[in-house]
Amino acid sequence: MAQDAILVDLDGTVWDSYPWYSELLAATGRVSKTSALSELRSGASIVSLLRRCGVSDTALARHSPGPALFPGVATALEDLVKRKIPIGAVTNLPGRLVFPMLTRVGLREAFPTVVHAGNCRLRKPHPGPLLMALRDLGVSPSTKSLYVGDMARDAEAAVSAGVAFAWASYGYGAACPARTTYVLQSFTDILDL
Image 1 (cartoon, rainbow, N blue to C red):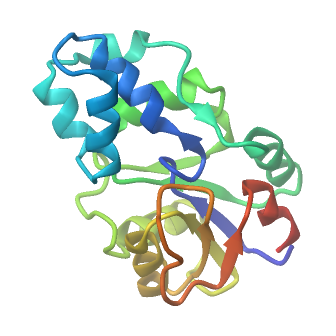
Image 2: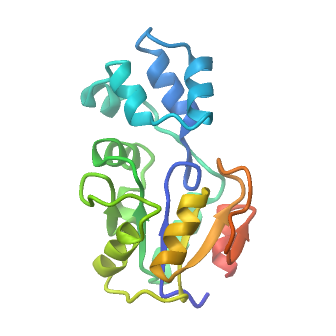
């Protein structure tokens, strides 16, 4: 692997959060699990849905066990850490969602930097969040760095930031975005790039 750094999206890339979000929303009694899942798959914002259903930060932090990781994520991240490859998470989610979820799934320590809606005013597809993460990791933007995501806005952010893009084909995006450098069938495929 010749990567200077690897940045990853979270929802639809590291974890399968839609079922977890749906359970959390359904627990409020204000929406069914099926309708919550349908809204998420149609592009509804989880932040808006949580607000609409009155989910508090405390309820979110207590909701167990956390989203399901996609196969191989934990071991692949462990391997990247052993290889001393700088890794970071870049998401449009707010930190109040991200950190409890990372903690629940045991990945908080895997990411020396986490750029989220609470510490970066810019949102993907703007390249700013990726550039901030690279700066935090002490890495200059280049195509030797990689951003892994599942949506077209992830690819757009990567290209605009000057880094390679790996599409998580197993995630929530329906079609391979333009200007994708790599297509991942599984998260573990990043170990072979």
